[in-house]
Amino acid sequence: MSAPINHQAYAKTKLLVEAIDRRDSSTLEQNFGISSSVADEIYECIEDYFVKDTKISIAPEEKAFDLSIKGRPYIDVYETNKKAIGLECVLFADGAPGEAILHLEVSEVNGMLMVYCKYIGF
View 1 (tube, rainbow, N blue to C red):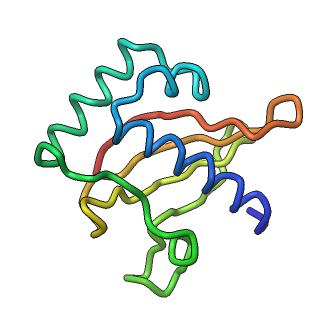
View 2 (cartoon, rainbow, N blue to C red):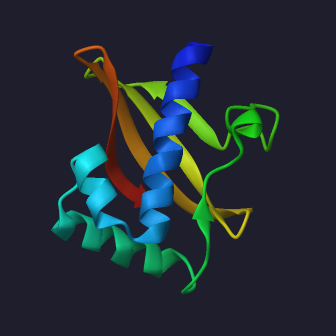
């Protein structure tokens, strides 16, 4: 993925994670097409991984795609079979990397970069 696309994907991913952290169902629906019932499932999943009131975030952009950190970047990028880009994003808890990974798909639709939340896992 090119640097401009990395930057755009990072910015959208950051907005998504910030909305999840705030439990902002309106932003999730308007900007990411995530229904309120799916948002509720995401919140429940987050509660399985993190203690209540933990600040959820992603790595700072300057470190997010760095391969020298633990041999794997905090945001791993790969091509999917659907001509989209997959992202595996380590979720941070109160500023430190956690075990949960947010799996996303990024594609271009009508010239706009779209980010789709797939699931949260290990």
